[in-house]
Amino acid sequence: MTTASTSLAFGIDIGGSGIKGAPVALATGELTAKRKRIKTPKKSTPTAVAAVVAELVDSFDVPASVPIGLTFPAPIKHGVVPFIANLDKSWKGVDVPQLMSEAVGRQVIGVNDADAAGVAEAVYGAARGVEGVVLVLTLGTGIGSAILVDGKLVPNTELGHLEIDGYNAESRAASSVKDREGLSYEEWAARLQRYLETVSMLFSPDLIVLGGGISKDSDKFLPLLDIPVPVVPAALLNQAGIVGAAVLAADRYH
Ligand code: BGC
Image 1 (cartoon, helix red, strand yellow):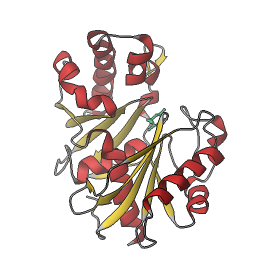
Image 2: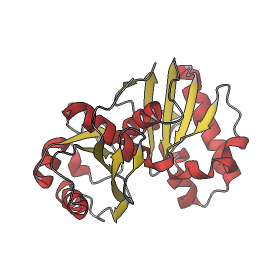
Image 3: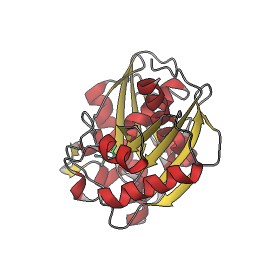
């Protein structure tokens, strides 16, 4: 299980629509100041996004002793983005911690957004103390996945890109698709059902945690699902990315 050994860290969550940041108290996983959100630049190139990250950190006046962790909506393998679905394609091959450390003027760690959410749920939230295999799935612009085995993360799984019925799964079942296609909860839940039954069959998880912005409305769609595994909403809702990035930053640098 991941543990934190400093009292405060700063988490930043880069998403397809917004870039959000806040300081996090590591003892509780709570934000110690109101989260700030800046719109993701329309042309979401590395330079444009790095400028927003620097603006965000500057606006909080984060002391140099506070570690900074940043989530990214793509796998980050040893710092580098191997492919990207939902931001500018020029991110491919970029070393995210290096770029962001230069932009901010200090060490920044980078982690996949769903992996960060998974760590946060394992340390403070719905997957805390759960043994066995936990699948944390974030439903937003795309679908992110984190697999935890006895609380330990298996990084960079990309289960949003499973091909199901001939489709890239996130192009059918992400919550952005519900908005874009104007689907009712019933219509969207039917797609989510198909997705969750497939991942359940493939991974035999003990628990599935659903995160992302839509997790706050889970009462509208969880009752419509019939999956042979407990499915619960993320306890940290869509703050899990910020919190998980902060935990991982503290682990790395303290
Ligand atoms: C990306 C993942 C990411 C997910 C959620 C997917 O398109 O490939 O890395 O976790 O979107 O942002």
